[in-house]
Image (tube, rainbow, N blue to C red; front, side, top):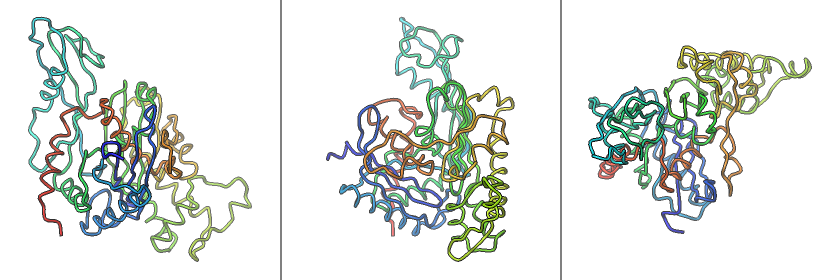
Length: 406
């Protein structure tokens, strides 16, 4: 199978490393060829804290995906998250000086470049410049101005930057596994590709990917990205509270959360409510476990609410879509609706087949989303990233190839 026919990605998470290899199928679907899943080591809250351990975890994950597919993984799309990521909105404007006053693709590049003409600190790296909307001669709400006539072209963009050191550490770990980097993608943007519907993006929707180390937020309005944020609170804090509150090791608390985790105060009957839950020799009551989880999840939901527009019930009528591993907690959608007063659903990836039994699960939204991002580029479609924005990170990846990795 030709290299160009394979799309690969690595979701470098705080609790797991997930490597996936896929082949583009019909209608935008993906045929999954190989999946490599390993526990994550050397990362905390989305950041590399031990390069050797992180590189080893990535290598192990890649090796398993290659064994499952019988193919060699050569280049990958990689997700980026962490508290070091920040965003802001910028405007750009250019004149259409040709006699025919016709907007061409080159004009789009010029106006996006205009929006990027601001000073990026030396310790920051530009990740994405994402068009939110265009205006021609003051006419707003233009989605694709190419082919339209006008004298002035405006664009409003959402600009995302990341700490150079954090990006370099991640690139070094991936390069240490003998892989090329096709693109670095902000994780909530990737997750949105996997779980959001077009009608939700148009109406206004909030995506919250509650993973192991971070909660990644993306707000969409009128089909475009509106706001992004990374919260350093997620599943790790829930597990830690269980371990401390119930007096058990962290690993046992993690298994307890995954097996029995719920935010519901009661089981369906009082008899079940009193039942003891056991794992690895540790026993707790359902009520104690659910009380701890519910308190922490309520806190996460309230932090998400702080990122929403003031009049969010009107601005995001499609509500909140929860994904990520913690979205599997029983009752979380009902709790979200109770806390935020919005429609809430749990989003899981769709449109994959092959050896994809585990992938239709919220925990794999980022991994599948990275593949879908890559599939759009493979098909020559527009992604949320403008055509030339990824070049700076591509050059960074090339420079990182020159590092001597021990």
